Image 1: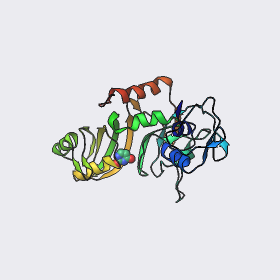
Image 2: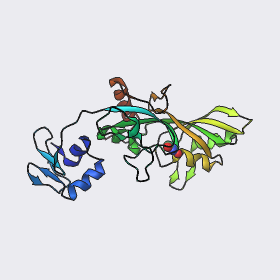
Image 3: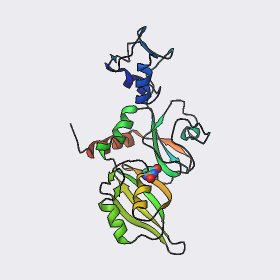
Image 4: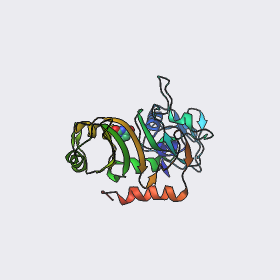
Length: 246
Ligand code: URA
């Protein structure tokens, strides 16, 4: 038996939060009865679960990585008609959701899955899964600026946790530098705000690693399915960086 919102989210209907809204709004039936209680449990293999008139099937779990181009939005839809990540996932009929987000202007490694539990595991703030970015910034930051980023900087939502920071490339001609930064958190626009805090605004941002998984030479806009060992490695990364085991 599992919680209804978990079953519905796992079937790829919508995010966990949206599924809770579906339940409380009376759009979900279990064995012919409308269920509005969020704590209700059901057995996805034997109960007949109907959402907005359609029976849900337990869907095959899929795990994908893509190289998101900049100028693409990570949401499932965009009222302004901008490109969305699923436009790039040709041939994938399952409804997948991004694991965390990348800004519209950020490119690079994005994971997508219909496994809500996997997504939560990797994005839960207490799991501290490392994410590495290449940030091209205005000006060439001094070593002291990088040290500050490494130790933690004060943002409006609090101090950032220790990060790993190093020079990747320095371009004296254009007075800019590319810095690699690994963070263990995932706050909104975090990397951009961190570099703003040390006076070096980001002009280009690319995520090159998620856990141990690297973007490598995947072309922009392309995607591939993860291997079983990559999925396991990502799960392990969430467990090994979990500081609040219970
Ligand atoms: N940090 C940012 O500033 N933007 C992203 O898209 C990801 C991390």
